[in-house]
Length: 167
Image 1 (tube, rainbow, N blue to C red):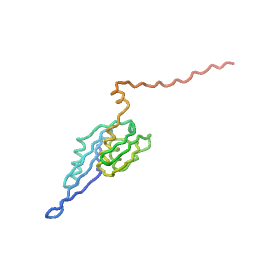
Image 2 (cartoon, rainbow, N blue to C red):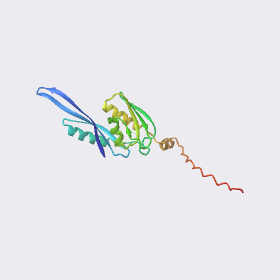
Image 3 (tube, rainbow, N blue to C red):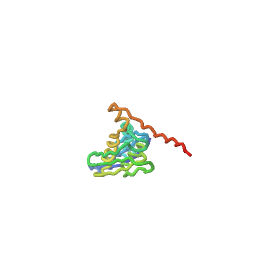
Image 4 (cartoon, rainbow, N blue to C red):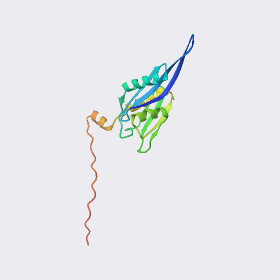
């Protein structure tokens, strides 16, 4: 399991004796085999917020449809003001993404992908938009099965037979 802290926020409340601080940690957990979970842990200490976020994220793990180490098709997703574009890439490309999107994609186990974050830079919304996009992915086999169709295998063309030489 890979646990990554994407964002830590400190908020304060003014009371009679001074300021009281509380922390929230946005945590992404994944097994690098197609499962990922995201959660926001809140506590009065940073370490407790991270631990709580990790526990919640492990409980909220979902499966993602992958095609080898990339995604099966392009997807455009949004959550709030954050918009994310995810595109499959050829082997050896790597993860072309910002740090918030990268943390989710690495946790899932994706190695080759092109992304672009459009709109809001709010870390929580960007992570949720990325997760929504990954959840909308469907493999060709799943689509065919839901429609009651069978996948036809293409036959490999045979090499042409040698033409006998006439002398």
